[in-house]
Figure 1 (tube, rainbow, N blue to C red):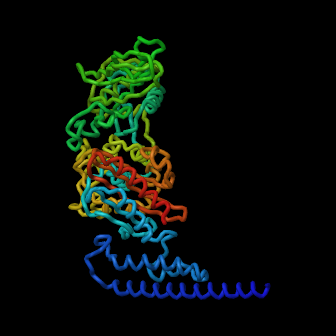
Figure 2 (figure 1 turned 180 degrees about the vertical axis):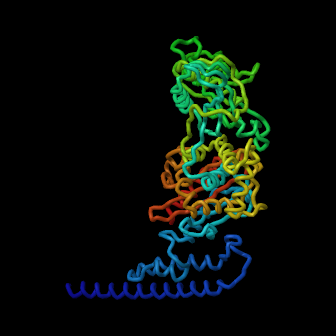
Figure 3 (figure 1 turned 180 degrees about the horizontal axis):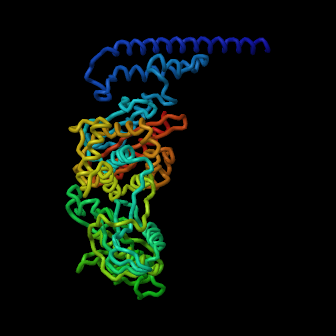
Length: 556
């Protein structure tokens, strides 16, 4: 009995050994074939390539894929042979647990399953580990087709600003005067001078007023004059859509801006049905008036409407409609039309709250050369302002930041065109994009006239990643999947949550996602996903892009 069991074990051992030997032999034969394929295709000049003109043809990719699969099979029967060493022989340095071939196949399966119209997707994926800013892609689809990128455009504006503006650059907003101070009286005009800070908000104005308070002035005998001449007076540049709306995303431009040049209106129900809703506006002044025509009703519904119109030189914000007594409070954001007057009247309100009275009026004007500084409030460092722009896709900040690049280069009364040219020239001269390959109409992407190839957007990501002055702040400025910014509600049930950092883009019929995807193995991918197609497929495109980015995170 014992002898029979020994005989059976011996027979089984011999059978496994024979099977392993056969598999090993097949593996080495396949590997040899793969090497021959690479040698045969290395000198070929076939125009039929998977990645356009990146210089890697389809035959080489087939060989690489075969080698990667063979390496895994060989490792099963011959663990003493490192599969990474086998890949080195065939495809160069190791790429991590997921070979380029595996990644390509996974992406292609997802794309094929989504069934998008031909030509509606522009895709590009590269390895961030490659030290060259012009490193070849591992996956491309219609990457040379010009497409509308929407707010993905902001990756260009952000990267340009990080390289062209001084590190730690802060934007000043000043209170100045050429008049003398006698006791607690300023014997003339006070000037509020804008330096182009897009993030100058109530807290900053409060700080500026408190700084001014230390001068001892409690009575301003002249006017408060707002100087925002650092930028031109064209509030809505030609590169914006032609139809104006009263939404905050269409706020006007100005070198002296305040609270994003928008008002916030908070609406909550009253305690009693039939009473007007409780409305708070941040905030009322002689320039902005509130009209409350709302009503509290039973239930949890919200049919509130908030509109803004200009009447006799002031902004009138009207709240109308009904809100249920059990409904939650809701904010509404409305743009204003005159940033200079909005900031000036707000400053008067803040001064008055600290006991400083103004005899004159509020108007625009130019600072005299003899004026001296009485108080200053500086912005946060420019990298943090760029992070706000990227996380929340602020068109207002993007347009302002591009103009600040032009200011840094000596321009005065800076126009939107000056800012656009500053970014476009950087793309051509520094990143190396041919001027004919892209069309930059609006630096925020708030225009359907922008056109970029996915490959060129990938080059911007590559350039940023290979330039230390840009990359740390550039990477941290990106929304984090499932965590913050415009990606906070996405990727929740996908592997990409927390591992993808990317800029979003959205217009009717346009969806974009572009940035970096990391893996637990240490691999990092650069990617650009753009959809231009039927508006009804926009949500499908967003879901596909989330899955594609998550596929990179799991990298095979």
